[in-house]
Length: 124
Image 1: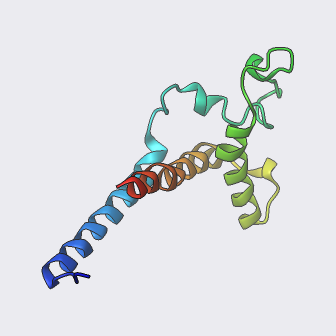
Image 2: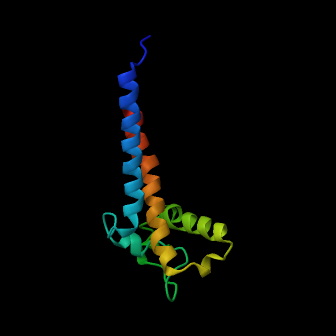
Image 3: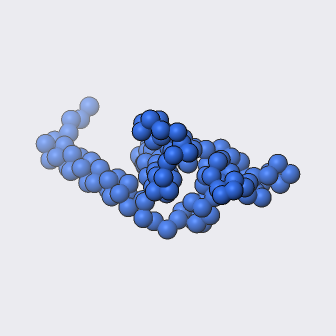
């Protein structure tokens, strides 16, 4: 069994530091991105859950069409907003538009660290 040299250990520490900086940049930039692949993912992200004035279900989620599932928006939008509302001790309906705009984007950036980065690391 080989042991790492001091130079290899130092390089590994520098690599992890650089990676942590990249994660921080990803999370800080996420709120200002224009959209994922399609901007509708942001605009309709909570509409089928409980947003909208008046609340209206997009056609893709209506039972007779059943084109999309409510599971991804629940994970990407509802859970992060619910967590924030619980942390702030307020009902979800009192979250501001800023919260509804920023929190799901930051949550998706954090999810991407676990989903994408961890998968790549595990395969390497």
